[in-house]
Length: 106
Image (cartoon, rainbow, N blue to C red; front, side, top):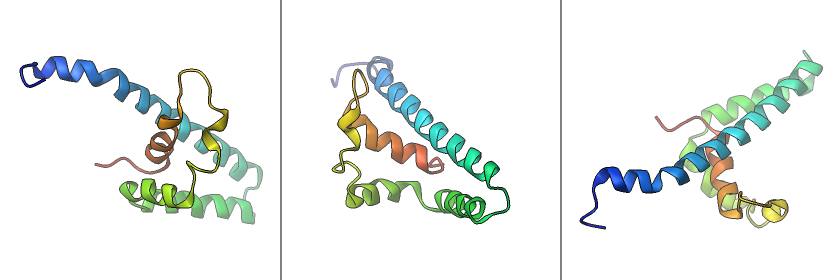
């Protein structure tokens, strides 16, 4: 590993990075589309306001803190990963939700 080139190391790990990125994108899109539809159907009512407050909370909360809080809340132990099949494995669920739920670390 010490004698490998940087390009080789990056290319070796790139598929995992791409898989996590796409899983986070899907997670974010599913949540955003559902929230948008809910807010549009109940425009000006309490559900619309609730979606706005939850969205604002998601944007305001530091992304690096969402993961530990999700672990403490028991997302990974609540059986969320029980229905996952095929290539998407349980070890990908919590990181994808964490990355997809907040703003990017920039």
